[in-house]
Image 1 (cartoon, rainbow, N blue to C red):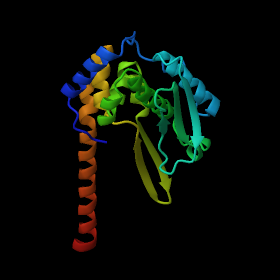
Image 2 (image 1 turned 180 degrees about the vertical axis):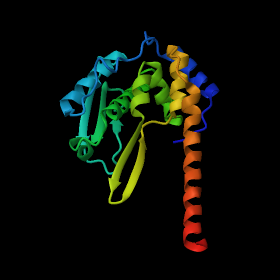
Image 3 (image 1 turned 90 degrees about the vertical axis):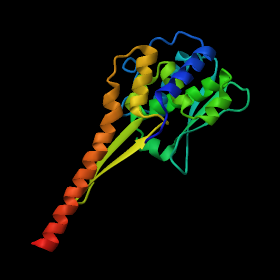
Length: 224
């Protein structure tokens, strides 16, 4: 996942959120105090969703986590005009087989709750134009630590003689941007440069590894 959202753009969004969304959001949501177990149930997820909704001022809204057959295996949400409901829909097959990591489920809930929160505070249009604002809002209201844990899921598996690594992402921002926002909003001393530059170094290392492999292949089969 890569975007070109600058720190200045993030600062502008934070200022706009401070103007429209008032509340005591100085503390981050306590992940460890109320976390999902690896053997979570639908009831567990519903409880966490209600707890998180109450934490950001949506206590009087009906928040329901539903399971359905989603063709693209992505979370969905539904807001019906001015009513006080929010449906967070997760893929039934992935959920029942516990293919959603617990941290990723909490990230999805945080992401969708903030879509509703932006709508409630009159920022629906701007969040539709710039979807990453929902991620900025999530950090602003205290879900930054949750996003850092669940926004990126790396799956490693061995099939036959091959070793596969796949990455799935939730949201629109990169880790260094989340770290920057947590530092700016909640004054968390996070090593932003680590998240900003490490992915680039990781990509360079992968390219060098591939070049070495190709060189060895050419030497072994053509020059021996």
